[in-house]
Length: 404
Image: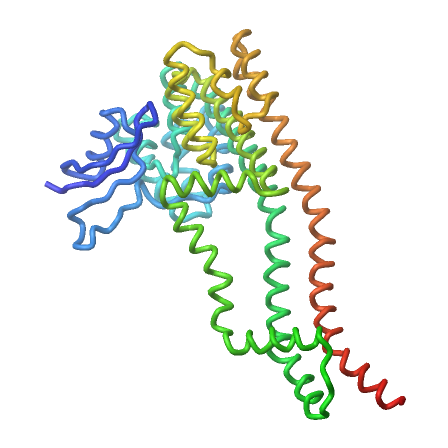
């Protein structure tokens, strides 16, 4: 019988890993879910000598494709189209081939009598715990149409917020890359040609020109370090994020970054509020909801605090109380949560918080783009202009000598 190596988290946020024997991949998934575990990784140990990792339930799907799917599924279900037919239709419509395969597999399982929540649970890299839990709650309460509508709104707002942040980040990244390329080309090809002529004339080079010459010599001598300089930080951060402690450090530092840290913080608070509101409205048990939110909030520093707050809930404290003494949760958010808990409208309060912070992310992203565009242009112009000026200084010295 095949052996599977797994890594999972329970309803209390405790991580566990180990091995188990099961006939198939699906049987292994069902056994772990029967133990109350949310599977994060599952590896078929006997699949190959190298213990090749299996992507759980299929490949990941782009947020844009999944957002469109959620809205279309909600619309079709409200129109009276049965789930099997809906998934078959949507599998033929989607532009993503991996997503098409997953939707067809879900439709086939439902055709065989499997519940929707169970069928999508076999594909956790496509249907995350938020989606699966809300569908399961909708099936149990008979309000699946309402849950699907909530999911459609949830993913539409999440996708819009994420795209706003991406659009704010892409301009400085592209301008930074362009600056490095322009400077490298000038230092490699332009500067040496001019400086060689000046040195042949025996002209004493001014200090700024000598500095540029030394930089140019360094770049030409150690050009192979440039890709390492560009790719090295990315590899280092990716390696750091693969460890739980490293991911916490990176996410904490990311929140402390000037300008960009505020944007990331607001995005995480918006995601926390929207996800928690949706799960609470779906009547998901509080501890279970907190566990799910901590894994999808998108920041390990905030996720760690959410997991710690569950201990307070077990001892009888309010939902908002554990967050009061942390800068990670703004006072307004904590106050709104406290009011919502006292009045029994926690989901409505969290929806308002989510709306506020999503609008804040939108406005901050727009301001950031408006501010960074001229700043990056000035930076690029200043660097290139500085190099050109340093190159031209010997010409001025030569002209002064001729005039004398």
